[in-house]
Length: 509
Image (spheres, rainbow, N blue to C red):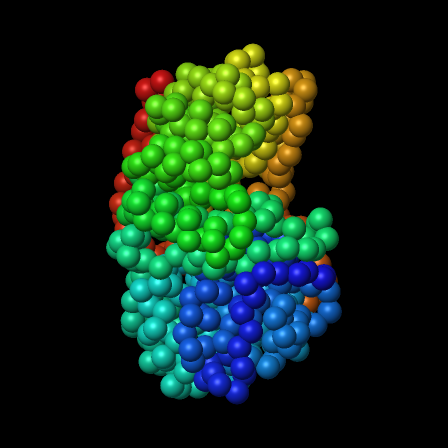
């Protein structure tokens, strides 16, 4: 891969005490399309005593983007874990560098990890990582870097046992996540790396764009949603702070487009004010996904259209009755009105996210979904597309107790919905039942599942086939769920919420 970037950071290796290999276990395009790599890169390199260089999954021996050095030249190998499906890539990257993922803990280079997957269930990774960061890095960054700089190997790990935000496999009895309480006082990386020239297949999804985080968490707290539970409580940046970040970031990067992200962006107070200011300044804006609540508020749709936005993503998930039962209390009428408004203001494309196999789903719910799709098709823009995915239970959520959908029945329902959606003439994407069952094993599993994954990678096998086979053989985690000692959420509270869901009979639509 060849890429020319702006705002690259290169440091003198002789003048730093700690060298970190910042690894994204996936493609350059995927890693640079989000804010995680940008933030970690900026935070680590913001310290004079730390050097961080980026690695992405590639053929052959992994080499850093900045200097072309191999993983073995670094003191610490740090992975950001955004999706369970990346676990196999983690193992492949280590093996390609000649590093045994199951080496004695604390020996040689330290392998550490963080991100939503590590926070939700670090136990499945416990045989491969020396240290896992639980929650958000900003409030514990100095503590982590100081421990890694002052001590080596097992001594550094021992220093962090029992501290908030750290889980040391084999030493920690549990863990408490770290989180920042005030986003307005939390640093936001404005001098972001911009890919100026690369192959089309490597270009980040947003292209040459400044990515701005508006919030963390989501007050809706849908029962299936990992993000809203591990990033609670809901926190957001004020309009003034967000605009300052945007204006400074545009000056630092030289781009003319902003992507405003956050799982609860539709609930951020003052978002209309931000969009109005950006539209008046002729700054282009993207918001990857939002709820009708925001789109239908005041003149938000007009402001978005005025910034040049031509595509919107809406996520009804399912039909109205089941949508209410899973905690997403947004009516069909809101989605239909939002799609109609997009057409009226000149937003030409709407993408819809749907799910199949949700707990308590009936054939009536599937009929409701197709009815909603038809109404949106009648009222919305001509350019409509869908993404249909199978439900996967996630740890730390009320649905962690829900059974993964039975693959044969899910396949039938998936095929029926796919046929109906394609009959509408819409482009279609999604993932099927086998992949969902395998992903559920990675999501809910313990060290035994990690061992199976390791064997699959060593044998050159397919993790989807291996995970699906384990699911079919009836694997269930130990009686005490693997992540029971890990906060952020109170599992007893999540259990009560799940029992409440099971008892609910009416929709509220």
